[in-house]
Length: 339
Image (cartoon, rainbow, N blue to C red; front, side, top):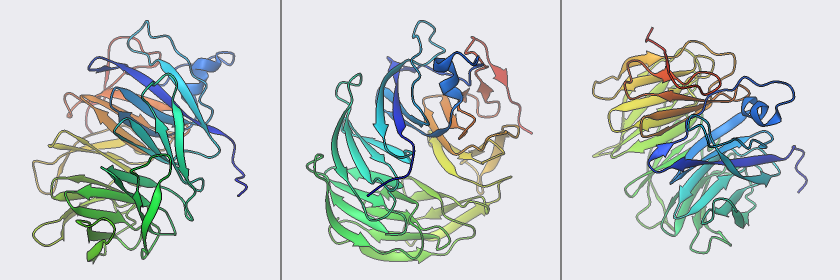
């Protein structure tokens, strides 16, 4: 199948022992390609054990590690399309590459990542969760795929589950699978037998279910133009709450058990306290020129991919006053007080 897209690359940034090399958007001169690359489109960022995986448009950044406020690009992996998301499990990166399908990458030697297997799915691979020898993949218009990944070189389809709308995301909580199905809301399935998922209930939600993330028996849902919501999974699945956001809610991350971070497109990101119901907004960033599309948290560092605006890092040790590492990665932080 011919894919009419420019090549993209997945970048791996290294962490020091227990400390992530934080980096900010860099002021780039026209001739400084290495720094300019960090201002290219960043579609996704994902922690992967001692690594940080990020997908960019060109992926040619190689930065010095002499300043710990800067990342060290240690490898690049080419893909024929933009990487949508990445999941890390048991030393492997499972890369969802849209119409190109699902790719497994061996990160045993992170300086020499090696593509292991590829499954050309019928839809558009958007997000995958992996547990043991089984994976569940959101495959766009073609629904949900349950896969046998016992051999990473040859992922094998066990079952395809039709969805009511576009399958954008998946999350596992114990033996329960939750799928984000755009305007159809979310679906809850029993996956005690992964080869035979049993539907439990479908929940219609406002907006568009774009992303899901699980914490124990609660699933948080990015609802696009309708904000963010939460679904209680037990004893009977039910909607707990929804709250509006300033712009389209696109990505989610948890900071410990008490805070939820939401990528809010042109409004940047919001941090909410989960110790209150509904959650209280603790802080937000000023509006941004580029839309925030994904967020990831490692320890007290928040990584926000701003699509064509690059990748930003914030110190969120105090979620009331997240502080951005300034341009150029100099030591010192710039406070963003809550509105």
